[in-house]
Image (tube, rainbow over all chains, first blue to last red; front, top):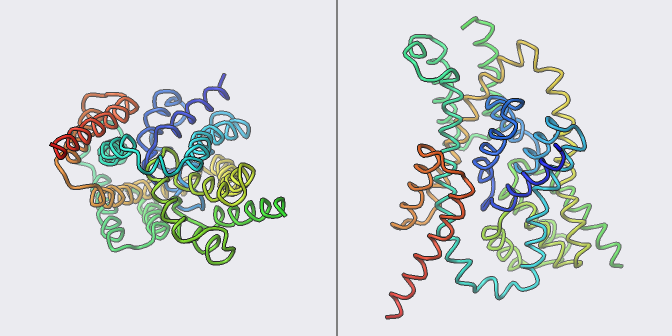
Length: 189
Length: 184
């Protein structure tokens, strides 16, 4: 049953993601790919990262609502969102009650020394996956490098990375990329 | 009185959820302004506590901080109201957008736009990765875990969940060993 599957998949994602922002991306990418890869392509997942970045609210909630809605309509998105929220909610209620013991816990501190860098490595892999989808959607072959479109998208990527490092707002970067994408598309590359 | 407080928590976090882009850390300044400066429900020290807790518990930072502030302010139902408030705007907006997107994704212009956007998103992800790398602790344990997590998932196709659990255990064991060494 899709509703139950949405709930427990996102429950697990919520329970095992440490850190904010894109920390959830590796788990979402893997779980969605394994379970619903035939309905939600890697491309549409990247598109949705852009939508999530340009709408208010936490990335995790946006992703859960979107994937839930694609797989099971309104009730599906309700189940996925409830699933991703519930672990945090319960854990914080417990921690809020015994905060001092939690703060001094060597076990928590020890685990965090492994978890913080792990998230960086995992996101590294997620970004590599996005890179492959953007530049080599049909796999790496020599023909990719002979077409002009590869170089156009590489140039868009380069310029946008420069702007991002100059702290230009993400929404502006997404809008600029969209305009260039439309122009390039109608010019027929 | 308490009911009023719970309703205020809901409204405040609804506003926070509706007006922060980028989620998580972007929400902290707004939470500070609304709950410390305007309402005086919690103190600046509580905000620092919230960040520390949100970072060392699983789940989205936005949810963690809403639940924590709500609980501190008005107990269980306060936590419930604040969490519901922070989730609801995203939920409604995304539900609407996913329907609109489905109607328009056949359009040529939309497809072209997303071709460009994907390259832009890749750039944003690279930037996020870079700033996370800079924030990570600089030690041999840290670099080993980073490289290990990357290689295991990228080239050996190990399940992400196993890697997360493994890295937590590795961090725990090495920090206990370091502590023992220091006690000697």
